[in-house]
Length: 139
Image (cartoon, rainbow, N blue to C red; front, side, top):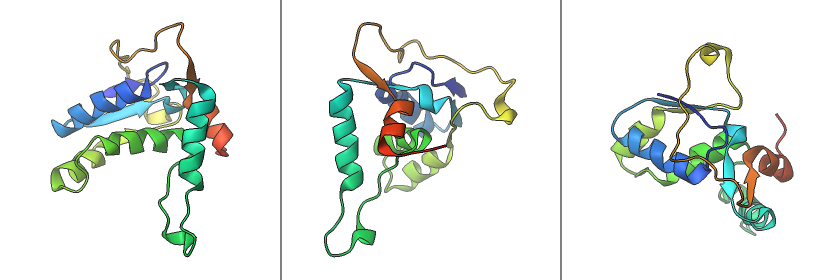
């Protein structure tokens, strides 16, 4: 299944994807940078920035690592909805591919647009592209 992530809410997209992955389907998400997170821009940025800045005082290399790129942010959110410590969850995550933009191999493939995950007009939001650029990602 190929999904176009343009104007889709990231959480809804991730939960739909996790359900399909657990059923054994292979999923490809295109245009990851155009996905949306609902809420206040400043609060969302603060949340992600504090996650990235977390370090252990004694050994910063032993700290948790959080992604800055939009494709990796989506993959991480899907991973959080899977049972990653079981074999079933790790096998499901291997069936997920997330891309920034549309690569050549999927240029002519027909991508689905999920109505249930669509962003509604009139709500505050930030696109993953803006968030990633604020966090320091360049692609």
